[in-house]
Amino acid sequence: MENPKIFELFEKEEIHSNLHTESSHFGKEEIKEKDDRHNKSIFESFATTSLNYFKESKHCEDYFNCDTDNEYCSNFASKKELKNLIYNHSTYKESDFVKLSRLGNGAYGQVFKVRNKDTNKIYAIKEINKLKLIKENKFYQIFIENEMLKFCSHPNIVKYYGFYENESTFSIIEEYCPFGDLSTFLHENKQKLTIPEIQYIIAQIIICLEYLSTKNIVHRDIKPENFLITDNFNLKLIDFGTATFLEKIFDIETNRFIDTNSKIKQRDSFEKNLEYSEEHQINSNDSPYQSFQHKITDLFKYLIHPFFDSEVGKCNKLKHHKFVGTAEYMAPEVINSKEIGYYTDMWSVICILFLCFTDNTPFNDKTEYLIFQNISNIKIKEKYLKLIQDDALDLIKNFFKEDPSERIGFKSLKDFDFNIIKSHPFFMIKDTNLSLNQIRQNLMNKNYYFLKSLLKKNNNYKNRFEENKNELKETILKSGLLKKQSQYIYYEKQKIILYDTPRIDFILPHKSIKGRINLTSECYAELIKSNQFKLYTPEKTYIFMCKERYNISPWVISINNAIEKYS
Image 1 (tube, rainbow, N blue to C red):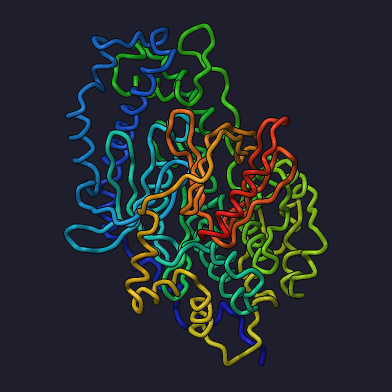
Image 2: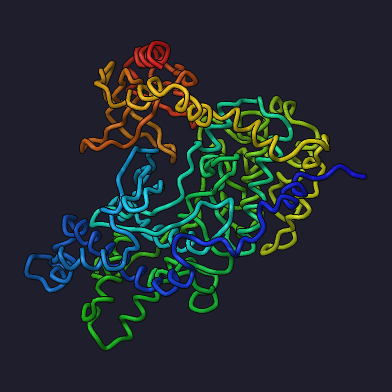
């Protein structure tokens, strides 16, 4: 008898059964009933935040002639009305929770561990800065993430409990996952995982993607950082802001996904909606500013693409917005703006499989441009291939093809055969006595956050010091202006501060914290050129530089000394 595949062990334990019986804090009917009110509330509160930003911009006087007496402005002027709108339609209130600690920072906000005052239950709250989303023309991600999380219910997807908002932030209430994320775990256990442990991790991700395919969802940003770890080493997928439905597009007028044949045909949603809005206003006998809805639509039209022609109200065409995801995990079709499918997310899974064996992503390089070149040419360094087990290497080689139709499991652009992947020899369990519980326990014993939680129970004093050390008085070891490389390759000047905690903060010119790097013993700085250095951390690699005539090596020495002395 053939040895079982790891997926058969999952099926026997019914880990991923009864998916449709699992519900969020609010019943599905109640959520469905409130959908329209929620979207209207979110949309109008975003419009108010947009106007506050817009009124401060140089285009305001020319375009809307915004002043305190203007009828358009007065529609949004009452903060009391806005608060009533928000509080009446939010599923929670901000005052329902107590913030316990900050779990992390993101590009558009922060994540907090919170406690519900009434039930004492612990949740995670993703607090998103509305103004930052508006400035970067990504406000629609709020609607998408809310829709996706309410739509999905699966053991490997983070649970959604509701939202609340105020004038400046939008907060999504999610399940709290106490044991870190998969990226940190993999970096903590560089090339130390056994084959069954890697099989277990990859199998959970595939089960999750197979469920998403039943909902016609492509996540578009599958990576270890987007999988949180709960007890029993259960992985939970997060961050649906870039997700999409196949054969549907997001309509910015209704803030919903709609079928491509209902309004839009083979066109980008933003470009289409812009043209639809203009045509609607041109053909209407009414003034485009007569109704509240027209005003909001027109305002958002400006914010989506704030470069107007000389004639007021007319925009240049929008660019095609399909280039989403994280460079190292992107599939060739994303880079080349071709049609995506479930095979696009599976490409990212195979990158994670590669990472589990090598502690490197397959196409990693010094810049994103080189990464994209490597992906397009399927160029992988030979030294990494030697580290991968034979069956895993066969799966990797059979999937890393530029043309999706040549990849294992491909059926059509809209269909993917997950069973072919699941039946691959790599997923065969050679030790028939091995159970999922044993694998889980082995993985948890390698998890730093889990071991730290055990330490809490046995050594309260030491743990209290570890938790509160960031709140103790800090000393600045070094500070100055440096240029930090962004995810889009260009360099942005920021004030960099090195503390003895040890950590590094990035401060923008207007004195707001852009980001933070907590330095551990696994981090180190390395000089690349006289004016440039890399900072390696378990999560990612950062690149800093200064003017050519300056020497940046004192920064490298100071950072490495701080890590050695204080971490």
